[in-house]
Length: 174
Image (cartoon, rainbow, N blue to C red; front, side, top):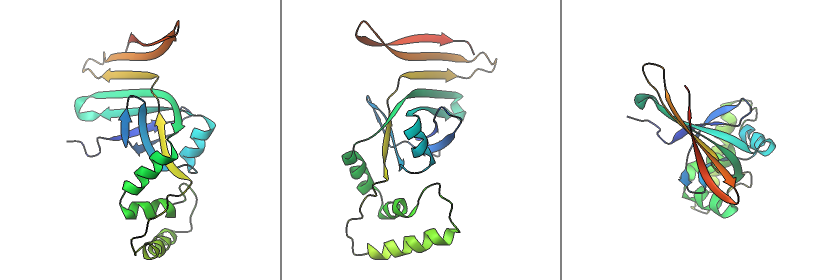
């Protein structure tokens, strides 16, 4: 039914969106991995707040999440990097994400060189410019589409009052 049900749209609250692959979620947030020096990494460095959007067309539902973004620990990035297929590890080294290249052949040639270099099974080092980000939710909006266009929307907003943190729930007009 869903081809990539763990893919999501990431917006950096500055009119720039892309699809990223969600690799984990827990009470402390939602995690994805990328090249820190690519366009999205630069944008997160400039504005460490983002919005995630999960959309399920067949269900006519979406969930939007906003919050601050931080890099995950080097240990967490290292652990995930080495859990990836070797080809993906090499790809992370080869791709200088978002930079202009003269042609795809440049990527393929460098990939083949690194594939040969690490063909002995030695550990492929994680590049310093590659790792994970975690978005810590401060707002969830749940949207259920309706044929009448009177969509059902609930918003949960994290707030601290008198030293206590709790979720305030608001119903929004469509």
